[in-house]
Length: 220
Ligand SMILES: Nc1nc2c(ncn2[C@@H]2O[C@H](COP(=O)(O)OP(=O)(O)OP(=O)(O)O)[C@@H](O)[C@H]2O)c(=O)[nH]1
Ligand SMILES: [Mg+2]
Image (cartoon, rainbow, N blue to C red):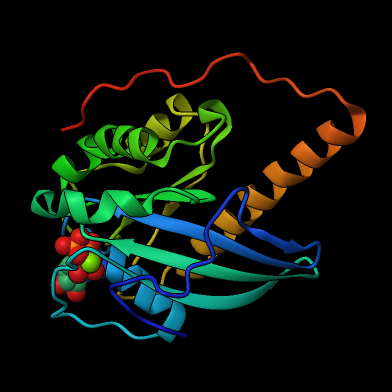
């Protein structure tokens, strides 16, 4: 486990996640407004700690965790980004090569939920993924331990339905609610997508949909 601002040992590159069939490195990236709990979720998952006084992230940091998913050994490389607008230029260069994007908001912060679309757009703009329609997102509604909510679970699930039916998890980094489940879901959606591509290649029936980048407009 390594924690740096400069990603010295990041294995990047074309399709850069598959080391072998049973030993996979997956890059997942946490995006969302400053203060929603991205760093706390990563730290809870990797080190099983929670800090109620955490500092805002500057740029990006990452931590690795190995896990076994249905008999496949996976190294999950979790990239935690700075959500504050002033750090935008420090985080966007690291979107490329991501296998899954975890869009995060806090259930006690309506604005962070409304901004999910902006985060998705920003990711699509800078990640340069080949098949935007198929790229896997997972949505996390964090801080469910808070009594006062501004975003209902139904509302959040509706957004996910409208945005490619991505999986939704209500998490608490503080109470360790659903944190492992959310990261494992990210691994599963990536592996499932890769299996599909594998099958398509075998059957020579790749459907490229013909849609490349939908829009290159600026984000908020
Ligand atoms: N109650 C509660 N507080 C949380 C939870 N997760 C994070 N926090 C608190 O929310 C504040 C912000 O958490 P961070 O993890 O630093 O937020 P972030 O998304 O990484 O913020 P940036 O680095 O600025 O993008 C901290 O005070 C955390 O202790 C949670 O699940 N429940
Ligand atoms: Mg942070």
